[in-house]
Image (cartoon, rainbow, N blue to C red):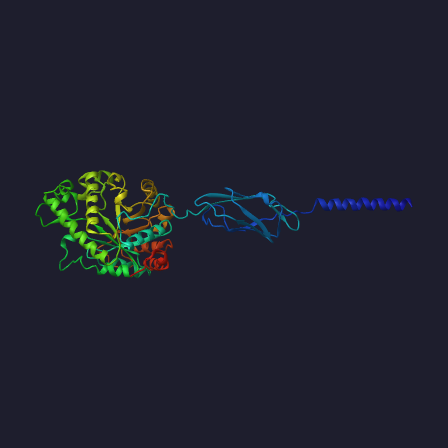
Length: 469
């Protein structure tokens, strides 16, 4: 009997030892994250409510939901399905904001062994989001009683601003479409904005040039594009001269005299303004709005370093603003109500700004800048003119638009310089925008082509009443 009891006791000790030994060596394997829908350092993450998925290498159970956090705080739910941990955000995140998603240590455990996960931090930044204009912005054209279709186009551009950049190209002085067709041939799509220039107004009408023939503009608008026009105003080199120039050094004309009754310069101004108004009224009568950019590049040489500045800067900032207002008021008196007025800056010339009541869009000309310097320039313009859309009136030797947008430059439209000597081959070494530049730019989904602009305009016509004629 004693032997039996000793054997039982011994067996109990052995079994206890085995049991204890087994408990001590149960391997609690920690689940490991093998995939996630938002990686650490991600940019431009959608701010909309979404499901963030964390994938483990084995089935897991939710152990402590409070260890899953999102900073800044945002309501969300956590659920587990097999190896998947889901974080469902319940509200929209803030635009352009850095967030940190923390999967704390022990938030989940291995469903079989009970092993706990290691901590994981995932940092990301949400998308910049659309440009939100100041609350006091009316989005009304500065032209009193503007043509409805002009106001509708302006409102439409505001709707695009911050989401898309309208592509544009320039015609030659004779209003040829060579550069537009060149872009279409090698990219498969067409620039959305066509820029015409009235700088040879003094020669029209003639056998070679007749600006009264608005067929090119009518066709462009009918094809779903936006019509824009510059006026690099050419004046006689001196009283009675038959040579014309727009350069400051090329003429004896002064802005001060131009604004003084009884001078030959004043006679030139009145005659040219009348002729220019006549041209624009031809388009107004056809219900065609015009993105109107007169007197570009007013900055003085001391500011920009540009050798050839234009005569409209020779009266200084006060003279330029008086000339601009004279043009504005004369056009208003004539009933020119189809314009979206664009003023051009070239850095450091903000004293030349005509004023909020006379400008709809602020644009700039940029050449030879990097993406980072363009972004800095855009920021400075946006701080100075928070109530105006910003655009690029003329450009060359700059990064493709996608790189500019990535840097934060939210232009409403852009137009590279044209080249008179373009042979329209794909390999042509264009001095301002090569075909490689165009191909990269037009392939970006944030850049609107004429084809896409037409589709968008047609889709929005019920609310904006804009449709190609």
